[in-house]
Structures are given as C-alpha cells and as structure tokens.
Length: 305
Image 1 (cartoon, helix red, strand yellow):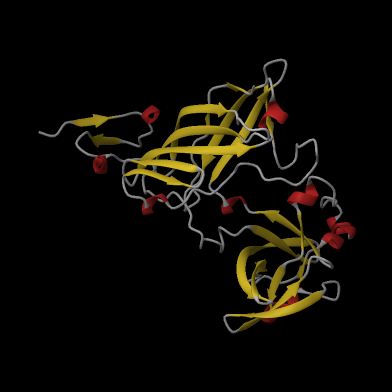
Image 2: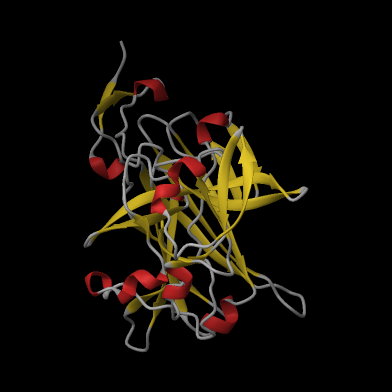
C-alpha cells in the first residue's frame, strides 16, 4: 500500500504528497528557494577577476522557470518608455531588436505604443510643470532613467512623435518601415523593466555596527559610472533534461521538471576594491514565466579578503 506523507511549508510543499515519486508531490506554483552555499574565490592574476558563487535549490509546481533569447516582447521587454498625454505618463514597452542596417546588424530598442496615445517622453518633458518631479540627467538617473537614441518607431506610429523628436534615418524590417531616432539628438525618459530578468541578487554589506545595508551596483559606485548589477536571466529550465548542465555563468543540476539546484558564479575585478575586509551576504529571489515571485533567501556570511 502506498504511504502518504504530509509535509509542512518549511519543506516548501503546498500540501500532501506520496513518497513514491516526484510527480505525486504538489509544489506551489510560486517558486520556492532554499539556500545551499556561497563562497568567494579571489583571482590570482595581476588584474584579478574574483568570483562570488552562490548555490541554491528551487522547486516550482508548474515548472515554468526561465526565459529564452526570443522572450523580448511584453511582459519581458527590456524597457518601459512613456507617452506624455496632458498631465499623465502612460508606460509603453520598448523591446531590444537586432536588425540589418547599413550593411551590418544593429541593436535598437523598438517602442510600440499599441493602442496608447500621446507623445514620446524625453528629457525635455521634465521641464513642464506637470512632470517637474521626473529625475534630472545626473548620476544615477542618467544610467537608470534616460536612454540616448537608437530607438525605432514604426512609420504607422509616427503620431507619438512631434517636432522635438529628430528622425535621423529609416529602415525596413519585415516589409514595414521604421524611423530611427539617433543618440545625437534624442534623450528619452525610460525605466528598466524588472520583468526582463528573472533572478534577482542583492549584495548586503555589514557596517561597523554589524548592520547589513544593500549595495546597489547601479547607483552606489564611488566612480559614478553606469554599471549593471548582478540581476540576470535564467534560461528556460524546462528545456534541460535531468542531470548536470553548464550554461555561461550557471551550473544546473536538474532533478525533475519541477526541482533542481543552481550555482550562479558572479565575476568582477571590483569585488575586493569595493568590499575588502568587509563581511558580505547575498539576498536572492526569482520570478517564473507567469511572473509569480519566489520567497527571498539570504546566504551565510562571506568575508572579502
């Protein structure tokens, strides 16, 4: 006779399941994470590249963790741009596209207003009283909230442009005409879309009083240069067979279509410059394809030497 086991939420299960196979276990549709290990490995060269590697287990009831390279459209687009309409700003998606231009492949951001109306917001938008609280073009907002050109707008959507937008050229894509707004004459207000990524990593640094504070690589660098943090995209895990797989900065041990273990190796030449002699821990969470959010986990403490 089959033995039935009820397991509590501490074991990351949503209910009761049998012990005779993973298919009988009912996990929540929200991903559940469990910390395994974290380590710091110092580089050995004259210009060292250091590594912080974190390992965690995941479980997901519907097995829909991960995004593909082609997941660029809403809700996974890279950016949100905005249409100015009266006193309101309406977000519209901006997706990265690679398209043939001037005998080579160029990377642009395609702004698609859909059915929304208004004028594409730029740096000049904040000069209007209704939008005076938009951030200025200074660090870190110059990195986070403004994009200089390389924008595509379909000719059929030219109504979102006005005389302040400078069209530098046009191109054809899939038999449709698109206008190019270059980086020289156009600075657009935008926000990065968090749904473009699915694994989120916060670096928590201990102060002299032992209190941990988040260090944000996108806004806290003393050099005040534009930089990315370590939030990233997991590939589509359902495409991986059970066993061990290596993909770029990830090592995967897939147990089934619903659970496994991931090691994420983050590399930088700046870890010791920023955190030498400090205690550090990480906080991680992820989203699945349906944008269900996982629990948040923290690692044990590592010391950067």
